Length: 114
Image (cartoon, one colour):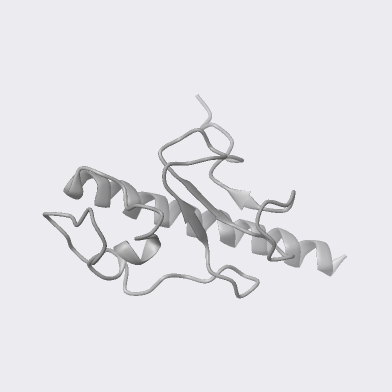
């Protein structure tokens, strides 16, 4: 029974991390007029990108990137392939394999209640 609670807690943590990083990505876009590229990745929130296109206005938005509850880096792709949005932001889930059913990302978010 506790195993189920631990799994729920880990998924809840992923959702919180994704929400926090989404807010910072939106701020990056507002300041830079574009999202970081896949090559620049989420590190663009921590250190000024050196790969083009370099942002005209840049501020450090995160001190460091969080790791998912399974000890892996979060994945980021821009433009988004799975979400149909500007970017995909996700954890590869417990198995750590990209593209499996257990991935948790911005394409699985439920719309806000109206």
